[in-house]
Image (tube, rainbow, N blue to C red):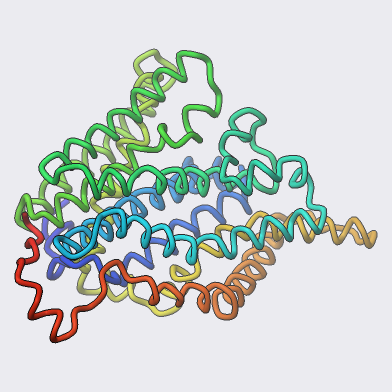
Length: 389
């Protein structure tokens, strides 16, 4: 594929890790893949040969690793000589609580109160963000099987800020690469030990996609390469990842080499998604860029977290209501997927407007670094380290 189509359509690099509009579109695409997989199930998977839900979750991981690392790097830089890194970490966790806890805990408590299947018996695992441990032992259990990825992200949040804020900057690339390697080693060991879900749903096994996003943020923020060089390198890695995933793996599937290569599948996907995230972070232009900035898609990306949290509880609640009132439940999976999707989006939209956003707006009271007024600016004689240091 010509480089002009892959890289030439991107605009000026975003260096401040503020709001990156086109990443909302990627969130919408990721959650859309999850909805397709969970609502249309095996019909879609067998028809198109891709597990769109798994792809969507891995894309979420790369985006999350990228954004969280970029935010922490910027806070570390802005706070140099002004606040302690412990203060930055505290603010990070407070801001995360405002963003992710409200709808997560509201959904868990409502699901338990409503008597949705299996929720009460595993309630403590979910409220402590240990859903992935429960699922690793008990398998995929409806309607909370999707909570494993939220548990993984929360466990990542507990670990990663201390790496980004306290590891010397010259070692951050090594730390990110180490996380990626650790994920592959972990999956290799757990597969060898006979684990079924342990390799894929535990946080160490997801560190390659999370770490790939983090590595991209470190390299981009600290300007190890020019934008053009970084873009070309990512294209090569993405094309290699696509060839391995779509061509090599199907050809050797079932062989010993194929089984070993499958252990690195998420890593190859990470290469692909890192390039996609990079392109959207600096802004895709032209017709593709216009499509990535369509208001309805951007809005779905903005409420994608709520969509993800709610999407399996919706069919479970409808099925329970139908059973309680003795109503015949439809069997047309296409019709059901449309109904589930519509209700989930409506609920997520209402949740964002009237519940999540008002709480999320409280983050303004907990900045990483207070803005300097005129007098304090005069007293701040120590220069703030530039982003590339």
